[in-house]
Image (cartoon, rainbow over all chains, first blue to last red; front, top):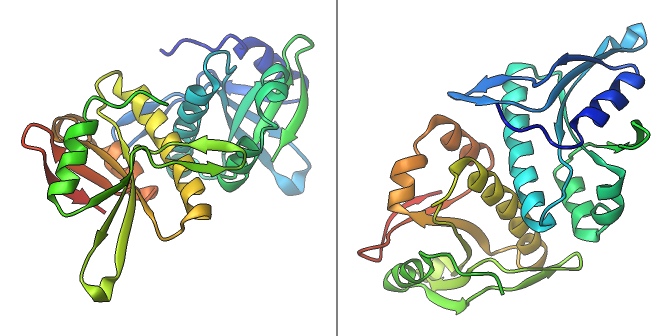
Amino acid sequence: MPKKDIIHVPIRSALEKDGWQITADPYKVIWEGKTYLPDLGAERVIAASRGTEKIAVEIKSFLGDFNIEFYEALGQFDSYRFAVADFEPQRMVVLATSLVAWDEYFEMPYVVRILELKNIPVLVVDTAAEIIVKWKK
Amino acid sequence: MPKKDIIHVPIRSALEKDGWQITADPYKVIWEGKTYLPDLGAERVIAASRGTEKIAVEIKSFLGDFNIEFYEALGQFDSYRFAVADFEPQRMVVLATSLVAWDEYFEMPYVVRILELKNIPVLVVDTAAEIIVKWKK
């Protein structure tokens, strides 16, 4: 079992406060002979016409060397998205991070552009208040 | 300047033996306010009808924890490919590794599938003999 990121609990709480039900922690997918463990599976019932919204959440605090951790997060995100797409195509894979990391790194032009080009949704949580402060879809 | 991978020199030699001219080491691209340094730029004049072939080569020995290093290599590869595409769209970005790493890791189903899905060309070098033994395009 991989070590949980330090901001795992506040992000989980923030999702629950926002009406999400945590259905798996970790959310496990077996794909091409390998087990993938994105941090959370979560579901939320929205207006009936939209049915159930489902996400898999990959949590990263980016407390170390951002360059290396960002590359690693991108590769991991791709792998999870490929795995989840074959297994549960309606589930959206989301990268979740703290407001501290967002403010420090996520407004740099190359980070903005890579997230756009790769179409990676980012969920930003104020980990002290345990609330979602931004959804960049 | 990033540390050169341990297999940098044998891969460079193998490319030269194969008729490539190394035009930059490292090959530097500035993109979205950030400097990217894929390991090598190389060019080869092929048959006139094909014109000039240009590659940027990212070298990875995968000597550590493969899971982490593979994710990191994928993220780095994407970033380089985005950067090079804006700067020199005719230059192909290639991941180069050793035959030892290829035999150990690159035939695992999830690795094969991810490289296919991401359309990542892989150049495999026998680093003892300093020769290219495989081009997976």
